[in-house]
Amino acid sequence: MKNLIWSLLCSVLCLQATLAQSNYQPTTENLKAREDFRDNKFGIFIHWGIYSMMADGEWVMNNKNLNYKEYAKLAGGFYPAGFDAKEWVAAVKASGAKYICFTSRHHDGFSMFDTNYSDYNIVKATPFKRDVIKELADECHKQGIKLHFYYSHIDWYRDDYVPRGRTGLKTGRTTTGEWKTYYEFMNNQLTELLTNYGNIGAIWFDGLWDQDQNPEFDWELPEQYALIHRLQPACLIGNNHHLVPFEGEDIQIFERDLPGENKAGYSGESGISVTLPLETCETMNGMWGYKITDQNYKSTKELIHYLVKAAGKNANLLMNIGPQPDGRFPAVAIERLKEMGEWMNTYGETIYGTRGGMVPPRDWGVTTQKGNKLYVHILNLEDKALFVPLTSEKIKKAVVFKDKTPLKFSQDKDGVVLKFSEVPTDIDYVVELTF
Ligand code: FHN
Image 1: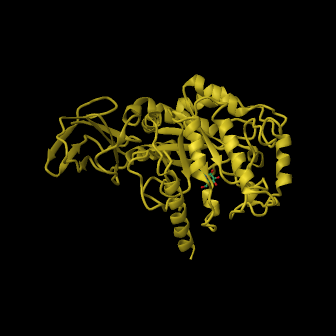
Image 2 (image 1 turned 30 degrees about the vertical axis):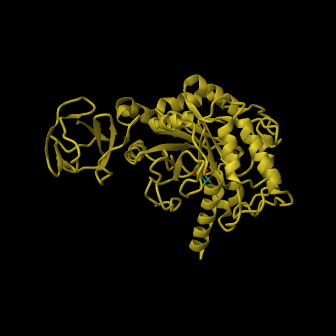
Image 3 (image 1 turned 30 degrees about the horizontal axis):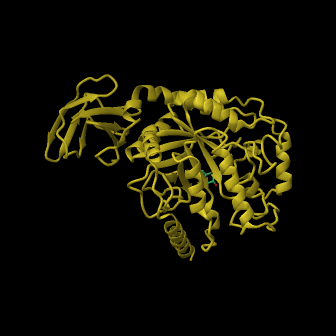
């Protein structure tokens, strides 16, 4: 039954979006931005809001059925004295990531920027009184990091997010308002976000799935998308609706899974776009927003493997950090960023600007490709030889990427065999093939 409702929802939503946006023609700037986005390969997601004070993730309001008026009191005590945009951006830059996607407003409805359309924001409702998005934007522009905004379509605080979806039902908010005012509110905020903070790389929507039991619901996305593209034609639109992209969207998003996989259960969509850039987001520990009890951080090796596997599937990795209530990144996160950056300093050439390689992912690893080079990323091999099923190109040269030492290989009609003097044990043993 659930599946039936879900497929019905998908059909209605896809139809709505397709009909109304069938004329979407991305501008030249937008097409260029898509390619730059693909080239960048690696971004950092930042989930930060007043929920960090509860130290139990960004869904705490819903999960603990917190009354919205009581929850709002967190704002009165929010003074993240350790927040320093310069330090954040420097730490991100050190990892080799090229962009940040920051939660401008999450499902709890609290705006992390100075907005004229709600006083429930970081400048007007907290003693901190600083527009962290302004500081972050200035610093990103200064340090050459692109800035993207996460924007929730859901609101567990306002009374005009109607009809109710399937979450935030016990926050005590009334539903006396009208969708029309909520829709205007969102568009006004999006206008602010795309007017007051310089060039923005992407708007990353989330929450459409909240209405999956209400398939008739019209989110009026086409007009919203048109507004964004009118304000900043190069700004990419992504929507984490867990469906194949709608017309008007510029990237396809996956959550906690590589394209084509669905271990986490958020990626049941029926296809992978062959034209749009792909991005998958993943947490560094197990939670998006700061959670004090979750110290279960993935190792640097696991994170590098995820990045490399994403690149091998032609996708970017958007890796998440949940800053602490004091405004600092957790120390472990900073350590991981640093170590990933060290790896990227050596191997970035095999990741940035590449596309998924002509040899599809295998159990042993993946390939990436740029120009006449194929990079064979060996992540998991217990042998001194590797068969690479590459038949379309004649290989002229094989070297170990890190020191360019020549590697023995043979090629016949079935593919290439690479021969090693020892079993490769590097985090990612990269072989560069020239064809
Ligand atoms: O509900 C959100 C969640 O809090 C987080 O923002 C993630 C990030 O992909 N998206 C939603 C769940 O799909």
